[in-house]
Image 1: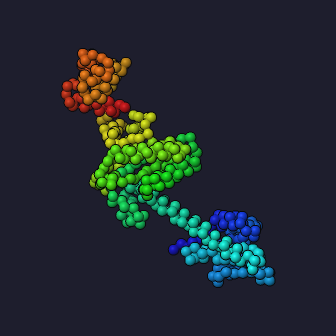
Image 2: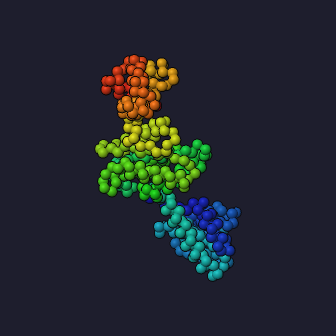
Image 3: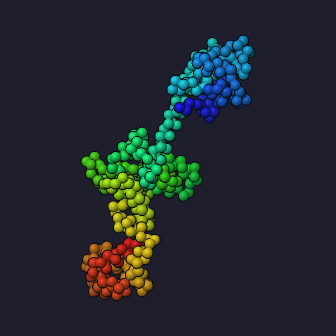
Length: 384
């Protein structure tokens, strides 16, 4: 097992804090007896024989004037072994007449040990958070290198057997420097963990945080409206408590499959991309409200998309004013109901029928046929 050690940074911090309270010089030595923190900077790096005695004999060593003259690098004072988890990790020395300062030295030692414990706990917490982040990132990427997911989740005290859905929080940090952006990300991550009481929050990049939330509510039901309400409140809270604006997307809930979380993440990712393109002023995107464009997104760079878009391209080549395209879009938005479409466009039904007939001729598709209607509707979705 790796032995616990006290760092020079923490040692000097202990010195600076305690010397503000008592009017004595303080030295902090590591577990080899070397001075690594001191009120007298010139002494840093020296071996302290009094500290070496305290470490080897595991006891408090007091040094008076006659004794100090016999030892190297030592002044009169008291040297207390510093313990963390019952292991001596260093020594703290308070300079002065032992009888006068012994009680102060005890308090300084107790204070130093408390500071070390706090530092140790923070390091453990930071390490746990890093492991959790690696765990989450492995899950959402379907990383095959994860040999034993259940064992890993058990050690981290995460119940991954419960159904989860992925949430992506995208941060607009374009105006911030890298350090500021990372600081804001960590702040938001901490806030999310506190508010949602979730351990499954990971920073994926300088602009993205991933959060895995329980898919089902307390009644063991998937409730989109409840998720939307909670996430919109979350965005508003972040907006008021942080310096950055965020957008949020919710992925799909998959009932079965070992990669259901990875699939949920992918749907959240594409919902974010599609949502920003279609609704740039919106800050909340939900896969369940963008199912068709999300599923069609994978076609955008393939030959199938070109084929699906070809009838619409024919229409555009003749419809320079865009009137026919607007008519077609409105017709689909009104669920193919001619009267509602004509009313929305403020035109006569005969005018609408004329336009629809023109669309059929220009695209080569028969709008009375279901398949041809679907082809045009998909083309409109791909074209957004």
